[in-house]
Length: 386
Image (cartoon, rainbow, N blue to C red; front, side):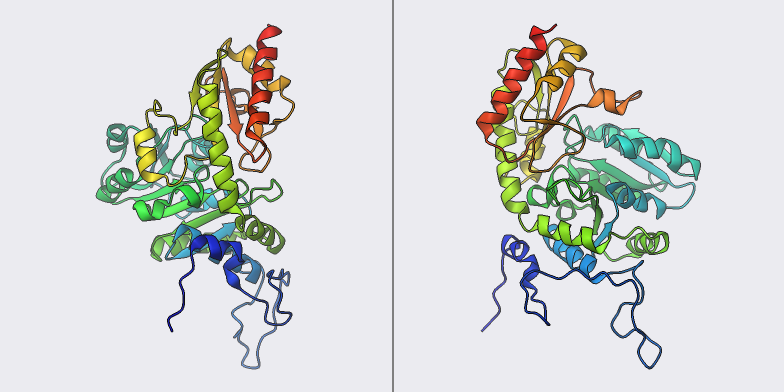
């Protein structure tokens, strides 16, 4: 009788179904050893030699993520999202040309403007949601990497991944996609033609605001992917076993959390769109969003857990609104089970593309009526104190 091929939801719920051989535990153990015994032939037949390049618990979490992303070449876990992202750029050579989304995670944009150029990369930024501008920025035979983020943080613009992949491929470049705010539940960039997908796994993959981690997944086990592997191996950027264990725990409930969070984000976006003190709601699930049709085509089962609002009354009213929330937490990060609110322009500083009247909202799993009531009260308080 042929073996049943279980769904990704079922495999994730059971952490790939692996049972510990010694104890028969249904929860995978944490392997913390940093060094391993050589066999009599002086080799490492177990496959492990030292803790810096490899770890069994980390491998198990990587296998689980590779399954979710349908990554044929596998996944690599890093000690942070920045460690994962910069490993891709470190795999390039000095003088290589890179095109990146103009709206993207602010810390990576800052790194590209400073550290990446300092050691020789040439970086251009483009509005990648505009395919004509993306094609204009990419230089055939010169550009080696196109880096896009979709939905882009914190404006939630949408880039057509399949079209961007065609542009990159025609120029002889790789396409990497930061899919942190989509998650493999909603978007699988590798299926759409991307070469690399990146996650700040600190966020929704873990989902509990207690792990800092990053991840890369690859479509093909080619020379570029092997250079990235070597970057992690040589620079020691691997995720630790305890963090990998917690990340695996988080991914077991990813489907359930994402369904709830995305549904709540959609409901909030619709209700806030008619709020008298909200000038604009930025969320790709709304029909009036300029990237809605593309998002509907490349995102499955929802439009993600992130949205932003622009508050009437400008920057001062936005900051007062954030100060007046009670249920939402004023904190950086996103993707956890608790809802967060943040005034992004003041966080990102000079050069930020973020409007000063914008508040970024990460939707958790709280009661949707409570979340709306808290925002409604905060908006009214923020304007009443003007």
